Length: 326
Length: 313
Image (cartoon, rainbow over all chains, first blue to last red; front, side, top):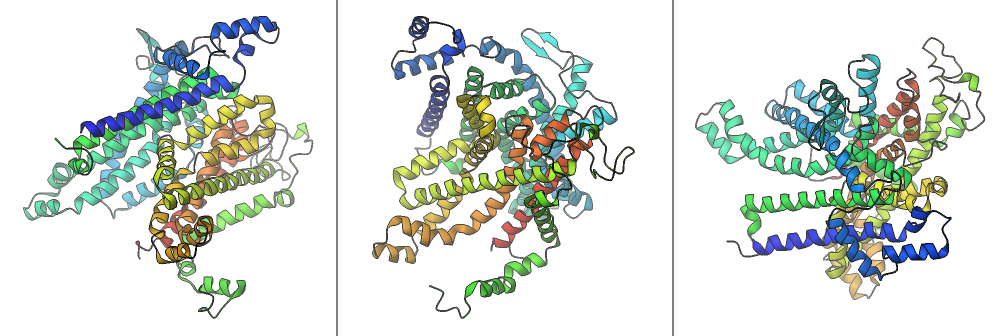
């Protein structure tokens, strides 16, 4: 166990160091930070003085280490475009993205799991066939097209829901939340549906496949032989074993919800991290780009590590081969 | 090798063998696959010959007086512009045809790039093993834990940051192909590596090695043809991904510039007019995109089942 954990943690650290190096290279080799800071007017002596003051004349490895140190203490530099510390920008934008992602994940679980179970236990019904056909179309539909059609139907034609922004937000400490106002909640609906769409189709197919496989197992046949009712077999016996793999996949998918929120936030002009990132790409705002890269990677790597370690705890079969099991 | 045993040779014979074969029979008898193939080839032909098929030339100076015309069946529409016109008076149908040409080109080029890169790296990793294998597959693992669209966005962001947005407009097409192509090579590498591990123990490879045939030739002339089946399937599904990725990046404003109409840029420009009621500027390109990706997906799904011997019917 210890050796396995150690190996996975070392691997995660190695990945983060390489990601850090990529984002460090963006600072060092892409464009000239001095030009960004004092423009083209400064004299050669001014620039040289600033270079020395910023440590840009130090050996690369020294610069890299000090860069890592700054990242670890939360000093991500200053945005070229907005002239604000990147850490402030992140703190300001993070709540919007997290609230949106949480709603989308909750929505996809609430809709996806029951529909998946239904299509598995009523395999032949035409409703199941319809749901499955719909989920195939859902996989092929580009997410931004879904968002556009949602806006066209519910905002432009019916005028029921707002099509952009977060509505009014309330401050709870440093956290700006849209959960406490009606306009905030109304604004959440369409973006959450769009972001949840792909996840929902994925969960439906996953739950269905897992459930069908579990229902073929010996212990289910035995339960039937004991005369247990369908209801008890489905929800008492089969469901538990279906949900373990589903939960891990859903956990891993949280990363892609964050990634796809870039698209959702652009469509709905949602003031979150994704929109910040897209604007940074458009304007070559390197400090923001690099920070987003590091933060999102840390999130992904952490998630993967967590899932791997949980799997190890949950599934004893993995403990064979490597390391001494305790 | 098989030339001596096979009585029929030449392209004509190969074609007739194909039409007699299982794959063609399987195709003919799956209506969904036939419909998908017809839609895909119809759209592709219309896109390839856009210059001749399109009723108008969208690159000529348009007449602003024609701007914002609805499709012909709505009131205020005209027979000249079947699907209406955009804000500059350009014919939407012609724009879609030309845009589809760009989208298909980017999609195909990106898939080609990921196939070449992924297959080469997969062959090398599977055949040589050891440190090379470990390094390549580690990189693949890392990249696989990030969604493709994020990788493509990051590559695009870095390239445009190093060239500056101004020069980047001219480079937009190759940068886009590079970003999408590099974001999708992992699947090919993993599949090819797995098949190469099996193939390299086969007798024909051992025979070739004993004859001191150089590794490069063994890899590309002997092993490669035997492992292309799954690559073709992934490539077909990959084309749908690449077309959607192009549209998404262009829609987000980091792909092609608005002067170069692709399905994504058309949807993006049309999206600005959604609220004022000019829905046709964005809905028609979006429907085209969905048709294109859905037909490729359905065809790819069929191909995967048809080429997979384990799923018998």
